[in-house]
Length: 487
Ligand SMILES: Cc1cc2nc3c(=O)[nH]c(=O)nc-3n(C[C@H](O)[C@H](O)[C@H](O)COP(=O)(O)O)c2cc1C
Ligand code: SF4
Image (cartoon, rainbow, N blue to C red):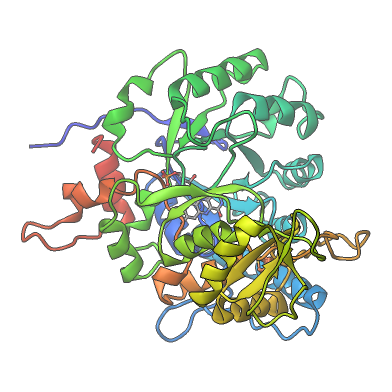
């Protein structure tokens, strides 16, 4: 008997009528040309990660790291920009071939990524088609809002720029600022607006001071408000892409054909990881299939300064504990900071803490957390010798992968002499190292495993078991067919 589809119509996105299903872009390398091309070929939207795109693969099919040789951060940053452009062009070509002219090919950039504007410009120049047009139909930009110049670069290349927002307020700001050259005709440049739910989506999250990270708000009301603002700005026909927490489309059925919501499509970030074309390792896929509710949580350890949602493995737990082993200090003992920190390899009287904190500090030192590291907030954290060595290596190996980095104090701005001017902050992780090593298949307990808050649904989803109860990982084609049914 033929299965009845819940999804019947197409939606107009990035200049074409496609199925309302979109692959969530995932850096570093968790979506690529092959996986995005497979989505596009099913007449959906495929999204290549434009951050750290692979320049090639080894004999096992694993992506090769960028072979940095530069001696300074600045030199390595320049190498990173050049290789990111090369990788982006390579992956776009692979997606373009694989799509066979169907669907839409999108590329995701992180606004906070080092040299993001130069990389985007370089990739879009390198993916122009001989007969006009571009292999890439749209750019999406997360972790920061696109600048006016980003919009102009896309417009010049005939490529849509689809903003990723987490609230109606953010879109209002964007329309006034980034897209101010297109008043009343925003749909010339915006092919869709991605609403990324700050409490549900995997990866970086747009929680601002207006939102409470512990008080999730219903996506329906927030998207309804987003649609209201879009309608006020003559964007009635521009689709919204709902991203974050979308697992079974049957749970979102009331959004389809709903006047409050308007044209709508759904983005799959975490579910896409469970496809054969997805480049993450088998271990990563199995890890996803073992997660329980609550295993994924918001944290504030990204050196971008944004909240992000990741699997709470040993790496995240260690960062939580590191921040807990934290006390204010003084450089000289006085009436409030009256007790010197002793027994930790720094000369006595280098750091003084309160009498109350001294008890905690002594206990940490006794447990082996005997290296005090200063933070920019005039506090000390206490780590093991091994952790201190690792943090030092992050700073030494830094390639300037972000526009500004809280961990290393790197800034891409020459005017600021390539530094944020702040002290390196050992409470953050090196996002590049942890994401690159995750995609290379190193010990996943120590890497950054971004995931959406509904990842736990994988475990009980019957789709991922065959008739013998063995794990089944579908192709993108099989996943799309399944999603269409609402399951
Ligand atoms: C492993 C992983 C990496 C991600 N990387 C990015 C990224 O580089 N840029 C971005 O805009 N969004 C990124 N996202 C967010 C996804 O594109 C998508 O919007 C989000 O995962 C949707 O929520 P879901 O995970 O509940 O499906 C990432 C998500 C995951 C799970
Ligand atoms: S320390 Fe790591 S995360 Fe920060 S800019 Fe350097 S490479 Fe990127």
